[in-house]
Image 1 (cartoon, rainbow, N blue to C red):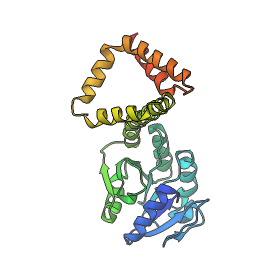
Image 2: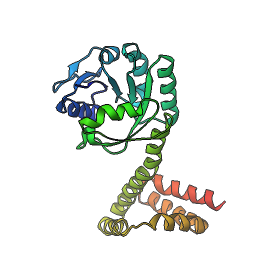
Image 3: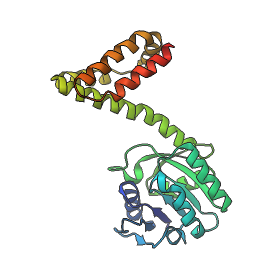
Image 4: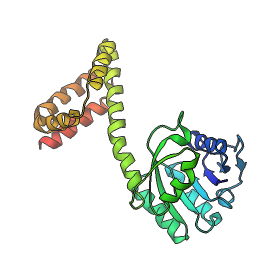
Length: 253
């Protein structure tokens, strides 16, 4: 039976921990704000959770990642991997890798590539760093989907964040556009237009978007300036429209 320490029992960490318990693993859980439940073994600290575990999963927050590692590294046994699943920058993951290395602990940068609720341990993940293959070897039999990259810590985090620039930027633009359309009294019309455009997307869509943006940057910058002005008139903060305008101005310069 795998023995896994899970640090951080919030939405993501709790779901992953519960799936590990259901798969037969012994889960030693610690979270200063959330009690271990559902068959987990309650630990009193990061180091206590790590003591006796074959794998440590840090699923708290990027803000707490360094403190959690420093607090728990003393309990990590020989050959055990410390896997950081928090959404942090590549630089943070490299910092964690260095701290772990100085303490004689192998490290893995694990990027969660989709929302965890509803998927739990089966959420697609990318892993890299010295301990990545061991993370996959321990978690895959329990149902995890982990793609191991032959790369140093930070690469998996970087790929996740690059993807986030697109997905979160797209979501932000849709939200802002619909908010403005609601203020203008035509939200249903714009929603149908957006759905039609997304449904028609194909393999050449990216080439068309990128090529058109560079080719028509000057004209489109003026168009987005007008769009930002309109949103101001509708009392909708033009965060995405203004950002698009500024990007187009840079490309046209």
